[in-house]
Length: 236
Image (cartoon, rainbow, N blue to C red; front, top):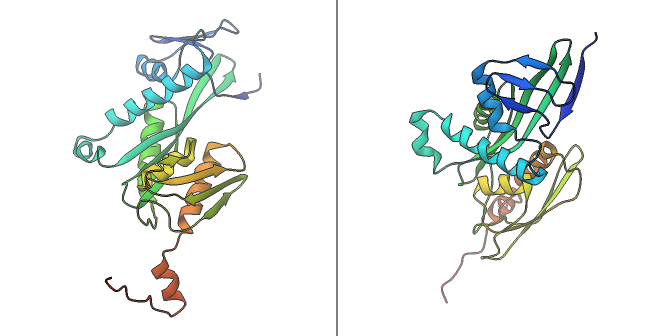
C-alpha cells in the first residue's frame, strides 16, 4: 500500500492514554504514553466547537512553551514575549494506521525593539514548540520605534502575504490581529494600525510583517543618509 499524506488543521480523533482511536476507519494504533499526553494538550474532542478547539489548543500550547523553558531563563520569560501563532497537525496514512506529526510557528521578542520568528516540526507538540522557540531567538531583527509607534507608514510583502502598517496616536492601542499583532507586540510597539491585504497564511503574514518592520527608518537615519543635519530644537 502506498503512503498518503493528509494535512489536518482540526483534530478528528479521540486521544486516550497510550492509544489513538480513529473515529473514521476504526483503526487502533499503539502510541507511547508520553506522546499521548502531549497530543492531548493539542487536540480536543470532536464534540467541541471549532472556535473553542482553536482557542484551547493555542492556550495549552502557551502553557507548554512556558513549562518547557529552562529554569535559568524562566525569570526573563516575564520580561520577554513569546507567542504560539499557529499549530498544524499532519497525519500520514500508512498500512498500520496513522502517524501524526506537528509543526508550530512561534514569535518572540524582548519588547524593546527586537523581534524574531521560528518554525519547528516534531512528533510531539511540546518538542515542536520548543524547537520553534529556540529558532525564533537565533535570528532577531531590530525595529526602529518612535514614541511607542512606528515612524512612518510602510508595506511589507512576502510570498502572497501583504501587510500595511500605519503609525497611530498615543492611546490607540494595537489595531491588528493574528500574526501581525503577535509580531508588533513582541517588538514593543503599543500604538499602531495594521491591515493584512494578501494571503491569510500565518507564516506569510508573520514574514511580511517583519519585512515591513525592517524597512522602518527614523528621521535621523534618513537625514544622515542625505548628508544633512537636523535643526536644533530651541526652548520656547
